[in-house]
Length: 106
Ligand code: FES
Image 1 (cartoon, rainbow, N blue to C red):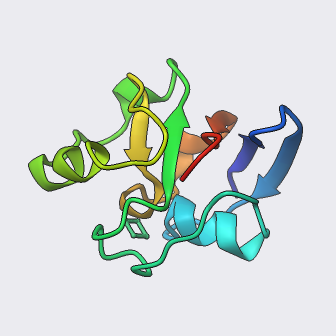
Image 2 (image 1 turned 30 degrees about the vertical axis):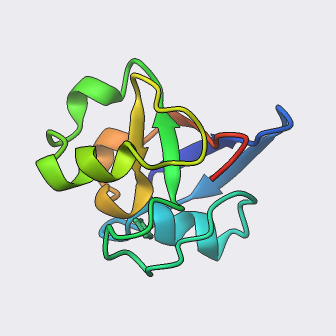
Image 3 (image 1 turned 45 degrees about the vertical axis):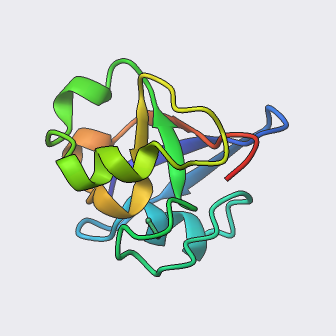
């Protein structure tokens, strides 16, 4: 199972083991990662699951959809180059060892 490290807004790290097929949002909620709210429960309609993926992972992920990109324009924290909606990223081998930052505001 892939290992993921979330970097919390206060700089602390929270490591998780993730099951393939879950979304990163579901992994965050299962592990009580602070800062992931997921009001729409993964429908890509709230942007409260905003994360910033690291430079190594970003190019390996499926391309961002137009809808996800539009939603990222409405995040509470400023959009960053690695910004994604965690509900739109499925866990598989590509995320093993990834470092994922939780923005200060969601
Ligand atoms: S959970 Fe609402 S956009 Fe991801």
